[in-house]
Image (cartoon, rainbow, N blue to C red):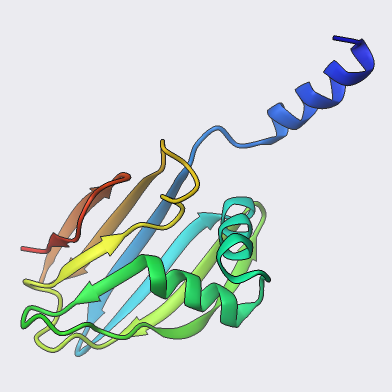
Length: 148
């Protein structure tokens, strides 16, 4: 391969982050849960653009709602209310609010962001509620998991 082609390709590979992951925090305070997702901005924009055709707040909120779910202990889906987003370097923070009946204990959660893009995607979810902190790991093919 000519050097003129190898150098730009090598630079692009070095610039790409090798890790496909998100980190989600669910923090219960009173009857409300704050939901914050940290995602690599380039992966997020790619996923939103592929699903929605454009990247803006509405499209991003729809993408997250389609890939992150919360169902209360009685089996009722819990809406995620968009709060906003903030770019911090190569990471984007996405913020939502939710109000699950009965709180997070016994709720089922799923975090499937970017699973449609990367077979090595790993999503970490940490939930803080009732004096406890629970960590869940999601990989492609996982189904919703119950919080104890």
